[in-house]
Image (cartoon, rainbow, N blue to C red; front, side, top):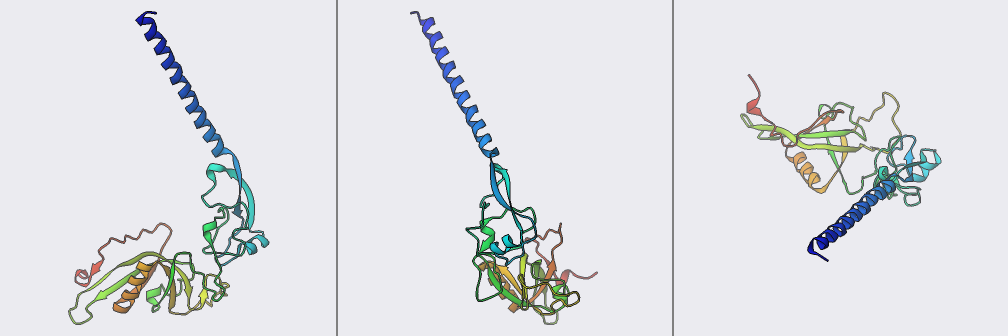
Length: 239
C-alpha cells in the first residue's frame, strides 16, 4: 500500500472520528435542552402571603397552587410540596406568581411575634417625627438611613451622608410584620423602629445613633441610593 493511500485512509479515519464527536456533542446539547424543557411541578403563590404566615396556613387559605414549569425555569430551592416547610413561617412577603422557595421560610420564634429574616439581626432605634418620614414608615418598609455627625459647637463642622443604603423595617413599636393592619387613621405613633441588619451594619447603626442623629428616607420604586456618596458638609451649605 502506497504512502498516498495510507494518508488517504488516515484522513478518512480522522474525518469519521470528527464527525462522530460532532454528532455526540450535538446530541448532548439536544438532550440537555430537552431536559431543561421537561416540566416539573412547583408550588406558586396565588395570593399575597404575609411574612410570619406558616406554609400550612397558606395551604389552608388556598394561597398555594401546584403548577408545571420547565425544569430550566424552576428557581433554585423551589418546592413541589410543603412538607419541608409545613410549620415554618415566611420571612418576607410573598406575592402572587412567586415560586415557593425553601429559603424564604424559617423556623417560627415561639416566644416573640417579631419575625427576623434568616441571617439577620434585629436592632431598634428611636427617631423624631421628621426623621422618620412622619408616620409613613411601617413594618415592611425599605428605608435608607442617613446620619448627621460632627461638632455641634459654634462654628463646628457637621456632615450628613448615607449610613445604610437600604434596610428593611420589621417593627414599629410593638407592631410587627405579622401584626394585623391598623384601622385607617390609627397608624402607630411609636418613635421606635426595629431594622433587620447584618452584624457590620448593626455596629455602624448603634454607634451612629450614639454619636449623631439618624434620619430615615423611604425608598421609591426607581430610587437609587449611592453608598459611596461623600455626603454634604455644613460649610458647603449656603450662598
